[in-house]
Image 1 (tube, helix red, strand yellow):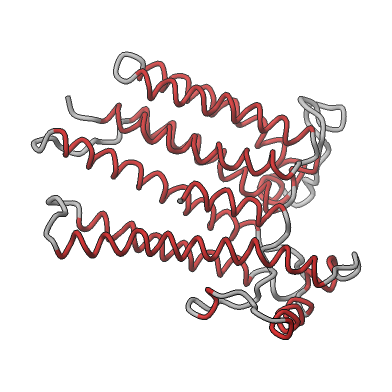
Image 2: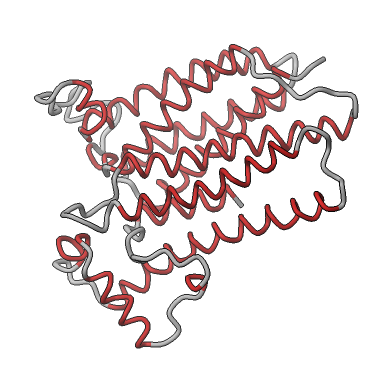
Length: 320
């Protein structure tokens, strides 16, 4: 379900749907507008946003167009609620039944809290695009929202593997994070963060050629406010960083996967397969001008790569 919601989040971003619902209503927001009057009221609230005033309105958005983007944001929020229910209800049930293994209660509660925090970050992200003259959400808050989802996915995977290991051998200890796995995780985290910033700034559109940008290896970019500003704000430089830091991530993942081969060949294959497909999708996304389904697939396989890396890290740190 987390993989699905990450993919739907990608659709929401690429279809510019994220600002279509201007309020956060955890209970009543479960239902979409049910009649024409309700739809017109929602549309009126959206027409007051900077995105509509400066972009969607001048482009000639109709009520039917609004219903399309509203669906994706509503579906994204609905999935978030369902993930919470699917996690929380069994957690309470197994807790009451005394079936949670010793030492796992704090971790499982922390994961539930992290899911709630993810929803809060999502609303902070939406709010950032509803005021002032910004026609998009803050790319920093978008990255906070996405990276929290991927960190949650990592911890869910790790916890599931620990519990499966415990089920096979009740005397087993939880896996530990090794130095190699930690460094690989940091390098991959940077790549994912750059990808989130690229998405938030629509920087994927900065070039539709590969490997060169603007016919050059390093494109022209705005360095007038310093390199740090360029690394965090300039769409051309961020796009360039994302496409070439990917190879640093690949090198780290190859080293990790080779270490895994004698320990867990399936985990090694999963890592190689995930980053191989991810590279192909990334190049195809660029060369098609960020075609919707390629962009979504790129984000989805990125989440699969996170899971595969978590699996590999767990195997490296598993007591033997």
